[in-house]
Image (tube, rainbow, N blue to C red; front, side):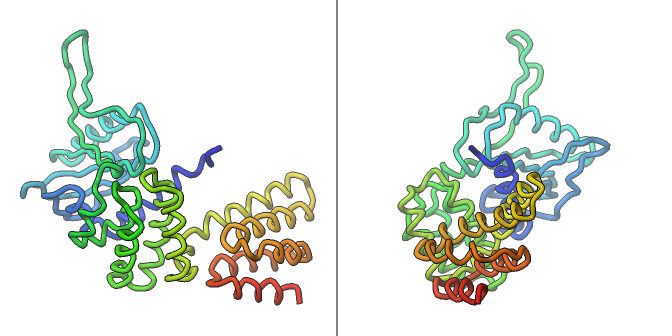
Length: 305
């Protein structure tokens, strides 16, 4: 079953990417667009909140660019765009460019949107779709458009060699702190990509592990902590401290078995002996950012010493 929070997590990752790189990403995805500044995304006196809204120049003329980041299917997307379009037009008195970015392949209504009355069109909305899975990854790498590299795993032709080349360029382009966040997003996009095989995903993950240690994984810390919190909640529901401890122990074992499978047997032995909730929490944080099996082994042995 899909985690109901998963689409929001991917949306947040994409919003963070655009927050960092909008000025360089937008011209790559929408040629001829020049960012001026970001706009308040709350539309006047309504509960509508658009994903991304920018003041831009299109063909040298002022426009409002509204972009929705959509990771799942939504049959009502054209109606949402229409609401945003009208609200932004009323507020800013500028032509509105409406765009939907789909990172992953979904079934979606094709533009344009037409409201019909019998055989007569009474309303027409033109909008654009950016379908990542139809874009050629090599085009962006050949153009050294590093700002878009985080999205490459979702694109067509995202081979292992191409992605490794992209990762090397990202390492040269970004500071260590910036790279860490981009690699976390890159990995999340790759996990959900439908253009890459499981084998290719595993190959790239091994490169991430070997080349960048565990620093790239730091951006997934929130979901690990969330998993731990869920374990605690299950314990509280049973009204037992032991249940809370057990929930965190299980989460910790899952992390180790997933990312350091050779240590699974040792972890089962050692983690079962740790009953202090604070110690377990600290161990989760340390193992998430550990760079090698040996480091994890030392953490497990030191914790129970």
